Length: 218
Image 1 (cartoon, rainbow, N blue to C red):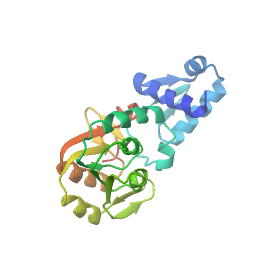
Image 2: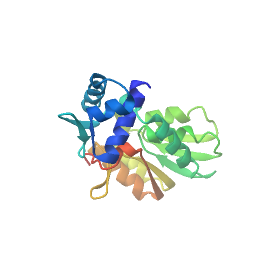
Image 3: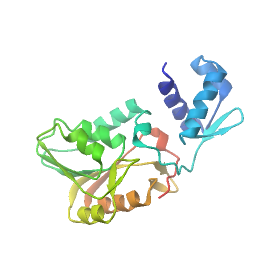
Image 4: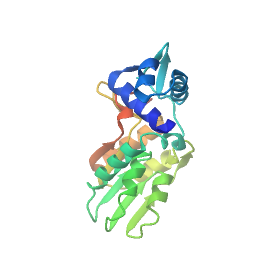
């Protein structure tokens, strides 16, 4: 098993149980405790968990805004399945908004067989994913680039979104907590997401299980 795959499974276990121990993980994955400690240290540095003596616990509050290329390393199989299922909800001739993120990028990937749809996005990676499909019209909002997320935000993007009303909005998340609700790591992203939700008939949140029981900044 590759290190990234093992680390992804560790996050899943921790989100389910709330905590994990070095000894337990060493037995489950049949690797040394040194290897597990290295895994936990890497995940801790990336803001995915909180290290404690002998193991780790779920990080309820997450204010770390990871670069998108880091997020792309984790939960790829789960994101692939989510993206495929979400794309099935899109019908031909619809206009939709796709939020920035890695899970939403998989939604875009699975739109290849759709006909005559229009996709509005503020995410450069989403536009890039859709560029090879001539039957899909892609509209970028414009705005100020956020390097970590490849997204465009700010007043220009906000005013642009206000001029559209769409069938569906696919929302990416950094946290989903029953008490706190849906959240992201950036105030400008959160403000833009709120406008997108207001201007959509239906809002569809897409996120993998690592976002459950976590709170973003806004």
